[in-house]
Image (cartoon, rainbow, N blue to C red; front, side, top):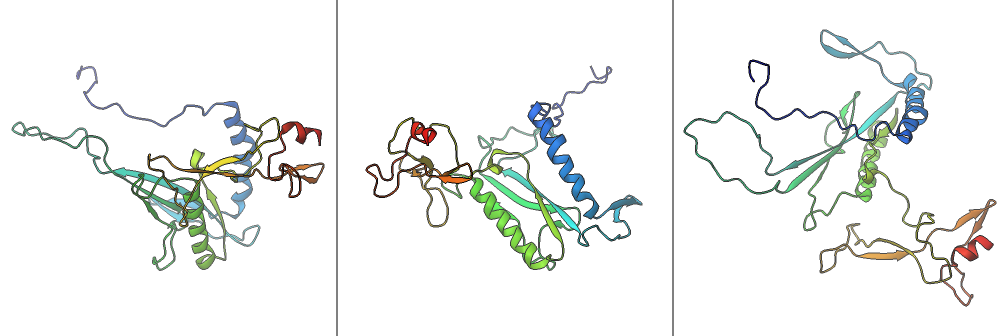
Length: 258
């Protein structure tokens, strides 16, 4: 096999491509993402390679008079039991037991740009980096709430130290990066008739952390769905105070009749 160009090793992994050619993905890329990037390009700094190093091209006056900085959100997770699967082993080396499983994890989240590198203050004392110890008995789980807090932390640094530039955050399409308001409009599971009904959302403590029950599962609480709009006017989905069914969901039949 070696003479034929083969070697016994771990297969090389490439990029994940599942779903990249789906119609909705291609449409978003062609009709939304690329045009948006093209619109930003005139205000971006330009870079070129000189002697194997990236250097900024001679500065030109931008269309808006301000530079735009693109910040890419980055998340990396490391595990306590990470180790090389292949290495040089001496003929006399004995087998040693290893811990089972991946072990405790540590996630590092940050923002990075071509202009400044990792997002931090000029003196390096303030940083947008977040360390998150995932697990029920640790920091919980990285949800939409943590994404929003991280973005707020990054924006505070930019507003304080880089107010002379415009900034754009770029997130990938992970499910934790997609979030609607807890009471956002949705026809899913709407009851047909009038009844006590609301949307289940995570119960959180004063620090914004999920609350867990004795069985280890996160506790939920009910919230009202937001009111809708019909012909430009607000349409209430719950009966108002003073009505015989005050506080109850009107039901889809009543909403459609209105």
